[in-house]
Image 1 (cartoon, rainbow, N blue to C red):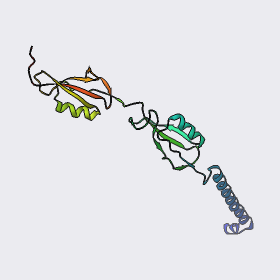
Image 2: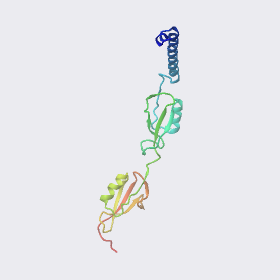
Image 3: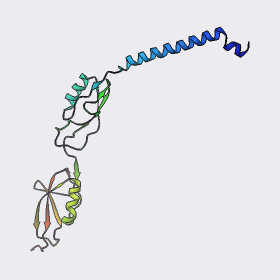
Image 4: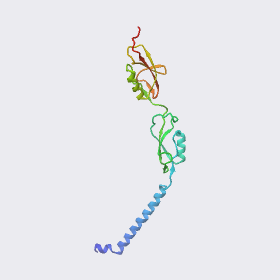
Length: 186
């Protein structure tokens, strides 16, 4: 039998028709199954989580069939309570599917601690921008007799003398003791 006769035979055309019918039925069933299993057209609105504690967030997400993923903490924000959510992704009001992961960034318990730089025997002109760049605030400046005019002789925090390398929270107020350019009278 030649190839042309085979391709035009009733047996081949019948098998080809059955194969096409099977593909159409299989595609139809697959699309129905996908629509059912993916909850096509059903969305959940992401709740507003910013400013809430983890316990409250967990309850809200469980009620909405959403999952929580806590990312690393950010820089301390004094406008939010400690350990509360300061950022969420996706944003509040977004429409998502059930069991979607909501990524949360938490507010740490306070400002991170930073080491006091070596500013002893440096001028106030050098010390001030160094401290401010690290996030410290310059508090009271006092002068004592020392030949180094406007040189930092001591660093104080809350009335106690501290040394370079001491860890203090960012935004701490640091008092400086400077020389006034006069020799000490010993």
